[in-house]
Image (tube, rainbow, N blue to C red; front, side, top):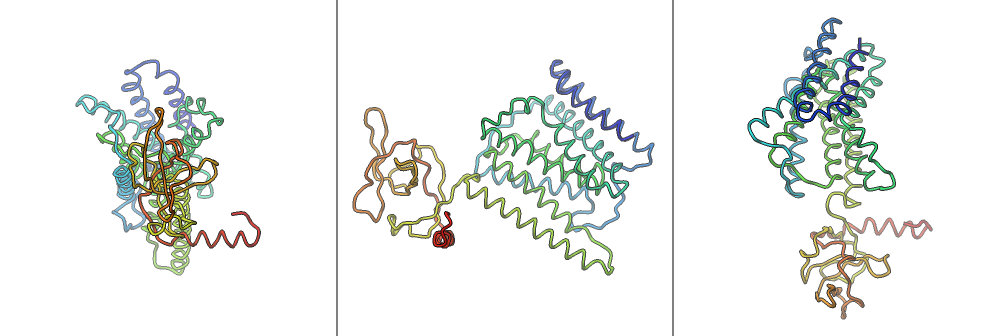
Length: 396
């Protein structure tokens, strides 16, 4: 009777995005929780009728991390929250959009609790039902993950999306799709291993932080996407590492496969971080020094981290990066003078090794940021690779 639960999930989605928005607070805080609770009860009763245990599976494995998949879910959720808090220390925090009056807290607990109960009990049922024939395990995990990812996205989000605005489209892809897919995939895997309580441990920790923390990290969406993608991936590695198999002849082969897959996953995560870092999505942009105009402060082969800051924060003697008037060259020189003329602010720069200031003053719209940290000589790797490409006729 899996089709009944699937139908109920889709029906609730339609009601939440068509009927309930017009009912105001009653719909949001009374009807919506009732719908999710009804879904959870229906999934539980159908599972009981079919002899399926969907809340908490018997412990068939021993775990290094906690005593069960439930503990693992809570731990991974807390780990993801901890990363967000660390990011917030650097990117800043903002006030929570939710009220913290006593009545509001109680109302939000009911709201979040019913949502968590409805989605995770129905998720566990669909996964348990779909993976009973093990040959459909992968297909079931993918379909259930996609289902619970898309029901959290409003149709208005899709209709408002315009691919003519690439930054907006990228933000939608990152926050609404990629991050949601990673989080829901881990929740589905936890549900497969330990039932609804395991996925509740993970998703509940994330929701509790989002709804009940008075301050929330306020990073750029790319950083949020990175954390929301990497943390579940690391969680998956932790779970795989925590599974213990019996002593048999296959154990060594299993451990080798596990180590191999974990290694590739870690490599992939590292590559994602490098890509995000290289394009400045982590808040700073690395720049390799190719000339000696800033000696001795900066030498050829150094990597300088450029932080995009407000113009008001830039002061004389800062090393700044700007776009030259040919709109092609990026220059990294020291700011030696700031002056105003006819209501406009101009910046005079100079290389430390140069005798004279740069030919033309620059305006604020050409400044990309200022140097905040230098990594000596590491940029020689990029310089060497580019020189090889140049010698063999390949543009780099």
